[in-house]
Amino acid sequence: MHNERLDQSNAIVSRVLVDNGLGVNVLFKDVAEKMGILDSIDKGRTTLHTFNKAPVRFLGTLKLMVQVEAYNHLVTFYVMDCSTPYDVILD
Image (tube, rainbow, N blue to C red; front, side, top):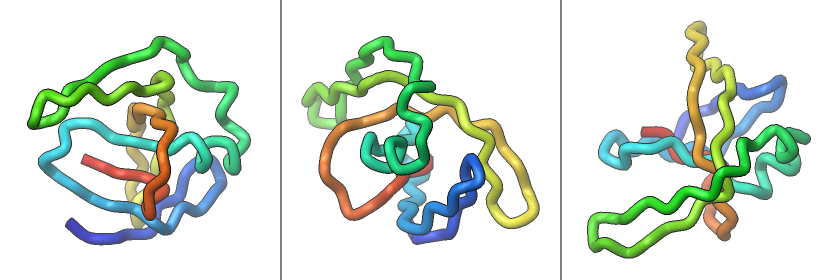
């Protein structure tokens, strides 16, 4: 796990946690609001279960083109409304 700079939707997001074991990419609601893309969320409410079977509710999903260094990737994010020190968690 490590921090990287991440460019999204003409916005620079710098508090990124890369966790290759998570299985999903997470964008937090307050970041989506700051980026002005909260209305673009596919609002289907999704519940995922953590390793200890605790349910985690997401507001929906959002697809964003993400640039990491010179490479562009279309990434699906689950949007979550909770407090965290990170802006994004990437799998």
